[in-house]
Image (tube, rainbow, N blue to C red; front, side):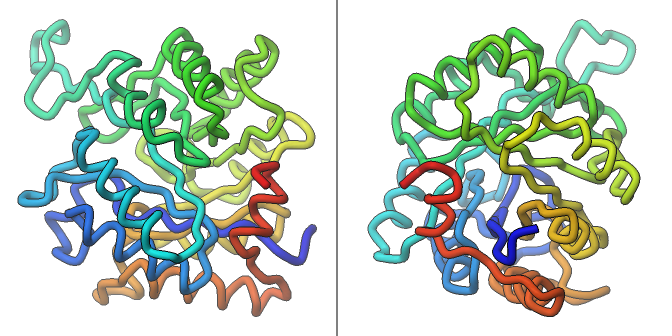
Amino acid sequence: MSDKTIFTCAVTGSGSSHLKYDGVPKSPEEIASAAIKAAKAGASIVHLHVREPGTGTPCRSFALYEETVRLIRSSGVDVIINLTTGMGGDYIPVDGDPACLDKGSDMACVDDRMEHIVRLKPEICTLDCGSFNDGENISYISTLDMLRNSAKQILAAGVIPEIEAFELGHIWQAKVLLKENLLPKNTIFQLCMGIPYAAEATVENVIAMKNALPTGYSWGAFGIGRNEMAMLAQSWIMGGNCRVGLEDNIYLEKGVFATNEQLVERGVDIIRRLGGNVMSPSETRVRLGLA
């Protein structure tokens, strides 16, 4: 394994964590500030969603993405921006009539999902594979044709895709895209562990998914909730990249809310105690072929 790893902070996410914890960043100013603090604490990449500033409701507003990215880029702090493309695939059926979308659904065409990537051109963006059950009564929809169309736009924009794989079949999807030359050679793989009801956050599942990855690609794994730091250690031990952040877990310890900065500091400390270290943004760019 490499002594140094790529470290990502997932700053705010698209879940309902803001209803449990008011410290989840909501406005562009809050998200950018949290991203900058995470970078200073050791994250070389910040993974970003946006939310409605007043309510904290996750959204796909281009204006909010634009302002958040502007604030980070103009801060003078060097950090790699990774924007999500995962919004626009939430399907919640009306009880008794699955052909109808219930309140809370967010279904959008590929062009709408990709607008902020095409126009803002971050260094990295996610490509969220699917489909899968994403909770008690919600499914995330991302068909292979949707992934093909998204991958074409990412490729044309010159952005590196980070494949978010929530179960083994999603790696299979990515291999199809690779075979069709729709993904670049420096594509990143992120194994997303513990999201109900995809792959559970277990050592066995991480090993199985890692073994299914195509050879030679940068990869990492993360866990949510109480599995966040355990999966960080597991990923590092297996030679993968690491990720923490309020998107994945809002607690520093039981009953104690965290900040992104604190989670990064703890994650970096774990890696160093295991004998490793984290890459700077410039080192990360070299590793990923961005330099």
